[in-house]
Image (cartoon, rainbow, N blue to C red; front, side):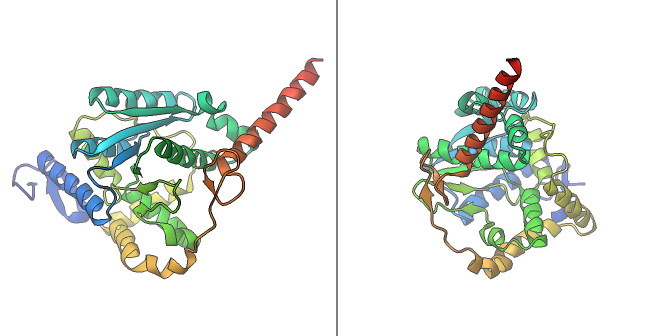
Length: 313
């Protein structure tokens, strides 16, 4: 098979586009996709300070690399969630990339900064690990970006992620989420930083190819707490549809943005935002979700400590 652009031997076949590329031409295709997304959706300007959320996985590492390659003012941010050895291994990958490319990096450690890890917190308050993880990460993304004076937060969400999220929201008719799902989440409060997804038109496989072609290290294993997540189930369903009809995921997502999303606009009613009376971050209640989680954890840990003292006496 020959490369569509230059006629040389192809190294990757993109079934959904019915085309093939050599290494160099794939890099051109990949870069053009990212540039187009940034330009079309006005994600950020060359002068903007961009905080890239990195996990050590292929998608976020690909995003970090391509934005550096394109010359944007980028800083990576890694959050160590205290998940067994997984978090430490991921942090090592991220730090090695930072050193290799002389790329600025901010590392936040949940256990050191706040006194608990995600698994311990989930166990203590008997809540879903993934739910708690999402709440904490969103809080820290925004806090670090706001405190650091960044103009935008960029995440490595890909086409597979976005299509799976859309399928889940459609199946349960989550009108509010459908109204808000987009490649750009604009700032709706002075203390909320704009969030963007520059890789939303690129698949997991394409991000993996970009990583491999550029010799970028990444953590191969999935988060141990992701097993059984509904998003993985939705991805499997979409992958089966994609096999039978290549391009299904792309059509599903892009047509939603073009035709479907506007039908849910009425469900995107503005909510009253206020500042958390404990930490000052934006919330819809008096106390934000993050601070409530901390209070619950501290209360539970205090109760356990008192119980332990009682047993010792």
